Each structure stands twice: as structure tokens, then as C-alpha cells.
Amino acid sequence: MTDRPYWYLNNMVVRKELRGTGVGSQLLGEQLRLVTGKEPGLAVALSTQRPENVTFYRRLGFGVVWHERIGRGPGAFESWIMRHGATD
Image (cartoon, rainbow, N blue to C red; front, side, top):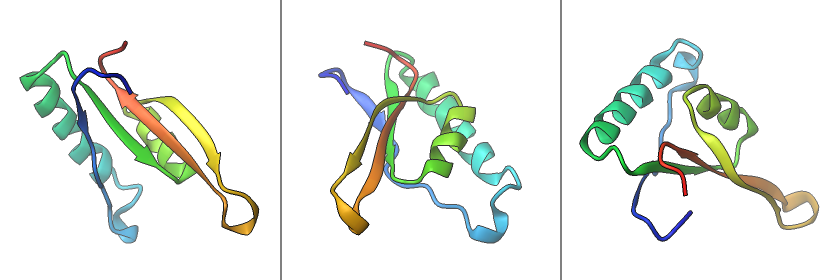
């Protein structure tokens, strides 16, 4: 990200049996409206290591600002940083 302040979404989990029902989109959408309404100039950032989460967050207006494969071999994983809102 930049040296400008931003909100950081630390953790969001929806129980497996509720995934795909709209609960996560509704909860996150409400939180985005709340924080961007209070401080409209600040971006909201998050990180994820799951490709399916990238798809979910993109539907809610987040864009990938960084993506990299971390490590080598069987323990390697991909990581994404995503941002919603204010740009550099």
C-alpha cells in the first residue's frame, strides 16, 4: 500500500454451510458502507491466500494491488493484497 492511512480488514469468516447464501456479501457490504461513509478518502485493504476469496472480494469492488507466490516446493502458497476505494 502507500504511506497514506487506510482501513485494514483483518479477518472475515463465514461458516461453511452459510457460504453462497449472501451472508458474507451482506456483512462486508455493510461494513464498507460504514467505514467509507465515515472516512470517504481512505481505502480498505485486506490480504488473502485463497483464490476463491479473490473472486469474492472482486465482486464487492476490491482490486488486486499485489500478487505473489511465496516459497518453493510443496509448502509454497499464493498471496494477494487487495484494495477497495481510494487510489494512489
